Structures are given as C-alpha cells and as structure tokens.
Amino acid sequence: MFRILVDADAAPVKQEVFRVALRYGIKVILVANSPINIPEEDWLESVVVSGQFDAADDWIVKHVQKNDIVVTGDIPLAARCLKKGARVLDYRGLIFTENSIGNMLATRDLMAHLRNIGINTSGPKVFAKKDRSRFLQSLDTIIQSIRNGK
Image 1 (cartoon, rainbow, N blue to C red):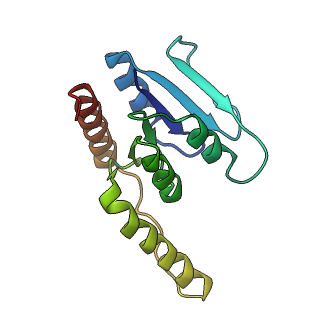
Image 2: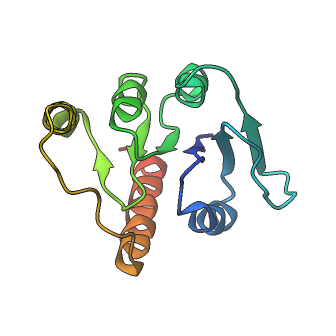
C-alpha cells in the first residue's frame, strides 16, 4: 500500500492531506526539521530529522517507495523522488512528472543565477484558496491513478 510523505516544515496543506488520507485510509508521514503538532492517529506519523541542511529531503528519498506520494515545494527533492518511482506534487497542486522535471530544474537554476548576480526576481505568489482546491484535486487524481494501476 502506498503512503503520503510530506516535506512538512513549510507545507501549508497539512490539513488537506490529513482529510484526504483519512477518507482513503492512507498512511501519512510528515518529515520536518523540528517537531510538528499533529493529531494522535495510527495512520499519522511525524519524523523529526536534524543535522545538515537537506536532512528532511535525504530522509524522504531514503524511505520513499514506488507509488508513494510525496508532497513538496522543493524541485530537486521532487526530481530525486521521481527517480525512485514516487508520485510527486507541490503545495499548489502541480504534479511533477519525468517529462516536466528537467525544465523545472533548469528554470529554478536560472532564477537562482539571476538572483546571485543581483537581478531582482519576483518571489512566489501568495498561497490562495484556489491553490488549496487545486492541491486537493491533484492529490485525488494521483490517488485514483495509483488505485487504477496507472
């Protein structure tokens, strides 16, 4: 049975993940650098990692399995999880795929380079209600796809 692993430090969609996981009976693992208050449920686990900068990412990659769902806003983490056969989506409902991740990594690197040389780039848009709705729709789509063997 697949699980949902959440890169949880800055995840604005934890409650949405909980609702969907409870409805479908899916185990959720929240991975963070500091403790997170969560309900005490058998299907819900919190993992606190410490140490180096990418400790949460490394834990997720080490433990993710084929068809697990990873929720993250971190594009390099998404790429690493896709290589292990996981399904990945960001907090706004964007589903990462093998076909799209290369361009996303390149764009991320380009924007970082522009910021490093002093060009002011705009940050992400404010997280809105429509983002939550799109996230829920995408999560449901992925779950149905896995259940249908696609």
